[in-house]
Length: 197
Length: 197
Image (cartoon, rainbow over all chains, first blue to last red; front, side):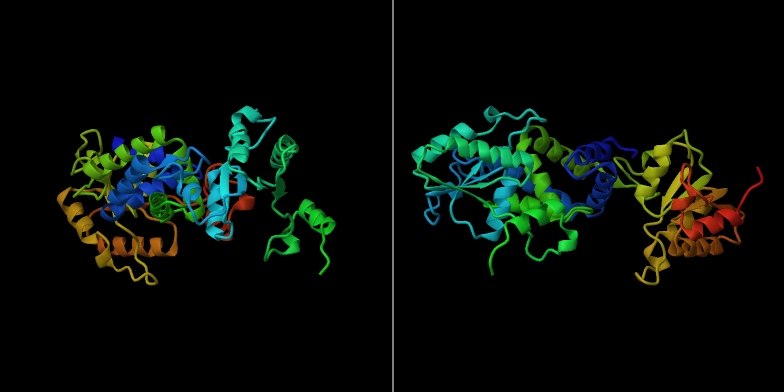
């Protein structure tokens, strides 16, 4: 640790999510050992993201253009709107490639503990979009937590006078999961919601 | 994941040690959200390390100068040489600040399984340093693994004709550790090496 530059880099990396000082040290040592193949490549990638990525003014996605390539795509269904908590949820849905509608990033969920109120989320924008874009179905793909459920109820209460279909993702046992590893809440829900084969 | 620049950055970060695709995604999303405060800072830190850090020609440490600030320090004992496996071990010893001698980075330990032979390690350089620098004590601070022990025996066999004190770090129960969590090997060693109070 004799040198300020190394310490500085370790400090910055250690503050990134899922990292700490020990893993930051390991990463920096790896970078130093592979400096020619790792450091310039990483600098270029960071610079490209910094220079080119912007927030989509319509849905809140990150892209090189705004409105983003999903909002402007002619290949996608314009009347379906999927509301997600954050961009990583959009990424997760896009990885599957099964959903072909529009998105709306809420920017969080309501939380009494964290003090997140409707004003902190892009709910007004969502309501405006539903009117402007002639949305026929809104899919509330928010987390299956208490806060997520409350937010879904709140949004659907705002929409109750509009002629719009409101859906949410199915809950139950994940594909490939073993019952033994499921929590009681999931097992209860899967039993209550059981389907006829 | 609609954009190439974001994917590219995720890919590079996911290959760093102790990270995978999921944590890389989380890190990139964090960077995008805090772009102004995180990305330029990280680019500068990476560029500084890339431009300024070199390998010390004497001990193998990373520093802005070569020979490094430890090798050239007038505050440090010149006749003690601590042999470590890699630079993170040097960092660990320096954090304590208790050792005030010189270092020698071996660059690994002998390993039959990984095919690491004496030629892969900086052993010749170590022998040359011992003669050139009038080293009086060499501390073999190599890992307490089978490969580490073999390497220590190998190095001490090379030095047996030289008039030099060869030491190794004490082994036993770590400070603050509970016996219950110690492996049998450590307990046996700690018993065998027990000291009179």
